[in-house]
Amino acid sequence: PRPLWTGKQVMSLILPDVNVERRANGHPDGEKTLISPGDTRVLIERGVLLCGLLDKKSMGTAAVPRPLWTGKQVMSLILPDVNVERRANGHPDGEKTLISPGDTRVLIERGVLLCGLLDKKSMGTAA
Image (cartoon, rainbow, N blue to C red; front, side, top):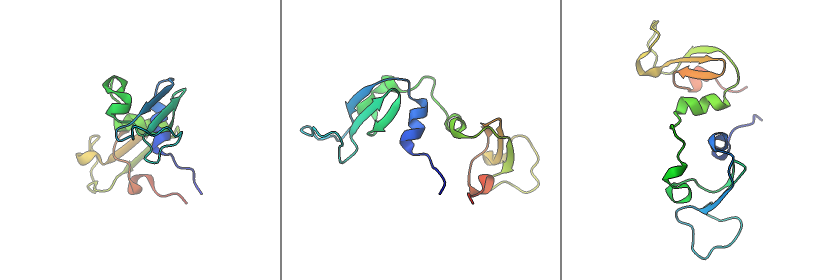
């Protein structure tokens, strides 16, 4: 088996070191249990999202990180320190330019995703 990241683990990478306990949208008013069946009780301890769904009600608009993170920046947080240059699905054969149509040229330098779309063709499958 290969360890995979959950959505809560990825979100914990970009959360500040805060302690928060709130209710997400759809949380029943009378529910007092520690674990909510709909995952609507939001609990963040020391910047780690332990349970709950992050939405506008639970975090508010002030909780959005400024400046906003791009998908490439979030992926760079979990990529290992590697250098990779590959082609993604849909990349035209023989295309040699630095900027590819459809962002299909994948370039990772020192663990930072500079350009491209990560898919099965560009990253391969785990053995």
